[in-house]
Image: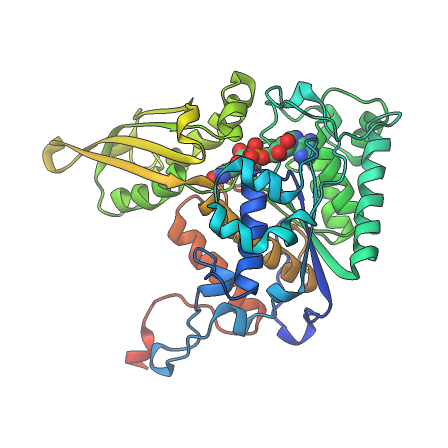
Length: 443
Ligand SMILES: NC(=O)c1ccc[n+]([C@@H]2O[C@H](COP(=O)([O-])OP(=O)(O)OC[C@H]3O[C@@H](n4cnc5c(N)ncnc54)[C@H](O)[C@@H]3O)[C@@H](O)[C@H]2O)c1
């Protein structure tokens, strides 16, 4: 069920026609993403933070001096060909939602205001029991059961694509974090899953309906939140059967991104870890949703697993056995989307001598997440055209809890993830993978 790789660039379908990017959720992240793409298209901004737009990729031997932009090597959809579709239980258009989210300055939104006003959310498949802290949810689908709602999402996808003349689509979940659900018998086979949708079983959360609808329509699905969504055998099996790429979970943005930068550095130097305490204050709607213990549990699981898999205490017990790891998120309205995070890291060096690292990161969550949405949509669309299906582990770079084939440990180290991403692109484009062996000097 993992990525099936092909090495023939010639067989990859070109990116002709429009690409619809669907986001369930029209909140801080998705509106920052949409406004940003439109500003870049108009030459008003630079797409900072996006690998698909700004990163280069070295090809061949170092002596060849070949380092094109990724987008010049890989046939990605052009920003000019993107059209945006969204669902949200709150009826605000993208301009109103962006203004309320307060991420981008008025002066940055004004030039693209008319464009954003034209993006109106389709009625959402939504239930308050899965995201308790949302108010004003009036733009909601009704139907005889959850399957009916999911069929309505499929119809939305088809209608939107027809109306906008889109040839292809990708979906990125930018909706709120849902309450914690563990995969049960309803999630094991597609028959059980569809039956559970018919019966409106509680174990079927709204994000699963979007994921099912996307996969059924041949639309790659990416999950930016930590909720289960498409991370269980029934939907993964369906994705393989339908030839659709999926990836998740939970955009890797602020503190966790830094963790996956610092922890590999400690391990590379064989420095030990006694404890890592992370806390932050956040005042946006996401912070409010995460103030609910049930939604926070989903997030906490996602954030906690990172250090263990990078540091491998089972291989290095003297360095990493039983380190303490605490993660706190505190809802604090005055800060809005501008999160402030503090990490206090207790490490040990030669002869066990203790040292401390303090990180005070004043980050902007949605500013970090928006380019991730863009890259995931473009790379997933590319993967689909390249014949890849099921879990796309090479997109782990973008996620806090990367989905993997059953039984495999996810890779959390940002630099290994980056190597895997670039090597996958090289491989798909018929270029040699780069191992950094440097043997060319001796040949
Ligand atoms: N910003 C980051 O750095 C970051 C990092 C990792 C993950 N995430 C996740 O991304 C998601 C979006 O974050 P945000 O800051 O934009 O949140 P937000 O609260 O601003 O927006 C989420 C939107 O989703 C809508 N929504 C809820 N349930 C829905 C449903 N069933 N269908 C359609 N829409 C639904 C809400 O009404 C809201 O407008 C959250 O789950 C968050 O945890 C964000």
